[in-house]
Image (cartoon, rainbow, N blue to C red):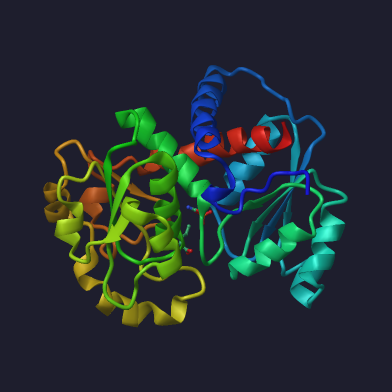
Length: 300
Ligand code: CP
Ligand code: NVA
């Protein structure tokens, strides 16, 4: 396989990941200045979405258009993927037409199987296990607001989910310490956590995890596909809301991030997400710039 995939943050070297953030900041400045930059003219991105999306779809579609290329949205509702065409066959066909493929799906194993049969780079746009594109945007946002994240402390408050797993990998790759506060029974995957060594550990108590942290991050209590667990999860996570008391335990200049969509009054209090420490709108915008840097790199 001669092409590079982006299925997890471990697919790229730490240097490449840092360069992507630098490039994303350059591309953002160019975009804001109105500079036309179209290195991907005539390139096609196929976007396979088996779950809902606002930010990911819009940022990839806008990003490809701005880079001079084109993006095609494919949903299982109206493609043969939804009628049982094998993932291997879909990968072989789509990758003969598109130059790069982005997939949002359930089982991570599915995107790995797809990538194994693809002739072109495959990007993970969220699986049940990881959400690496979001981390590119989060790392860009931290750098823009506070400088280098290496050596800093990040508190993850909430579910040991796909976002948490990508934060664990980011701690390894970008060199920060991750404190994870999750209720028992909602821990991140043991293998992913252990592979991170001293970079990430479970602290359990939210205030302890957030103490002196430079960045506090959370995510929904029930992810896509877990809708029927909502009530049970609301009970389990009741003490895990990021509120102003929790933010006071963090460093005075701590930032708050959330990949969105958010549920005010559940995982985050309204006065935190809408408050002065929150950078969630920059974080959302940076999905566009960071993924443009990623597309340039993978198709470069
Ligand atoms: N953060 C994120 O991936 O948002 P969407 O689900 O709207 O794409
Ligand atoms: N953990 C969330 C992230 C949404 C962007 C989910 O998987 O639904």
